[in-house]
Every structure is written in structure tokens, then in C-alpha cells.
Length: 146
Image 1 (cartoon, rainbow, N blue to C red):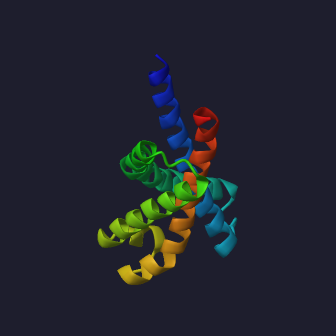
Image 2 (cartoon, one colour):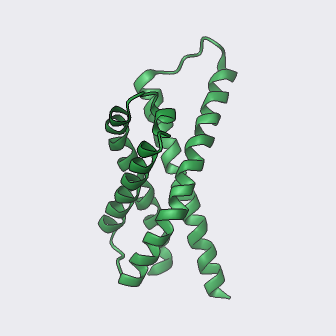
């Protein structure tokens, strides 16, 4: 019974931690380009929610397809320190950024027509998002593992 609850908590924590990515990306876009309210606040809300959904789907997919196996590997190897989780999250997001670049999907996120430019423009932010998401996951998981 507690194994099921423990697994459920891990999945919930992974889901919540992955939401750091769309929040960070949207905040970065707002800081970098500003918020255009020429078309009204409803348009700002609609585009923000749309971006949150798009980035959220990508980050949740990455978290469950790559982050969960990384967590299982860390658990098996008894890795529990926050720097290792941060590095793992950064590496997972680096892999995701390479995949998005090779499939041409990163153009959708950045608007850069050249794949190399899109990757170079986005990889620092994506790696930061991955590291922060992994650290958030570690912080939520930590009280459970002590």
C-alpha cells in the first residue's frame, strides 16, 4: 500500500516540477520582449495560457519519458544530492533540445528558421529550465526520502 502511495507521490512531484519549465520560459519571454497590451488583456491572457499549454506538454513529455528513467537510475545508484539532480535535469533538457532541433520543432518555439541558430538561442534557457525543474523535484522528494 505504501509503495503505491510512494509511486503516486513521485509521479505527482514529477508532474509539478515539470511545470517550472513553461513558467520560466514565459517569464523570460515577457522580460525579454515585454507584454503587448495593444489588443487587450484578454489577448495577453490567451497567448500566455496557450504558451503555457504548449511548453507544458513538451516539458511533461520530457519529464515522464526521460526524467522518470533518470530518477529510477539515480534511485538505483543511490544518488540523492541536489547537484546531481540539477546536472541530470540539465542533461535531460539538453537531450530534449537536440531532439527538438533535429525534428525542426524548435523553430515553432523560437521562430528561428535555421536549426543551428534556434538551438544556440534556446539551449541555455532550456538547460536552466531542466536544472531548475530537477531541483524542484529533488526538493519535493527530499522529505520523503529522509
